[in-house]
Length: 83
Image (cartoon, rainbow, N blue to C red):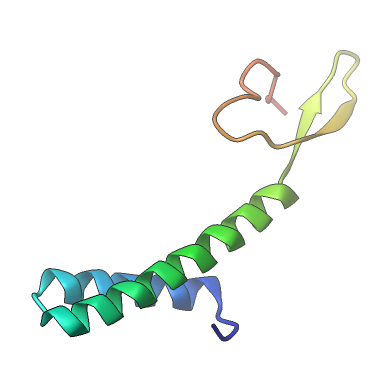
């Protein structure tokens, strides 16, 4: 697949969902579904890459901040996130 921006890929995914809900012929549906799966994979990888770049600043006692990797799913909830 050619390089696409995340936003363009998401917009195309929305179009694909609408077209599949509209009732395409089987052959066309399979082709569009395959494109949607490729776009979904691309978007998932882009989000994963972005997630790895996210860093939280945690305030420690004494007013200093330390960086900690972002952990999805609320795993950082036990840390103080007030700034």
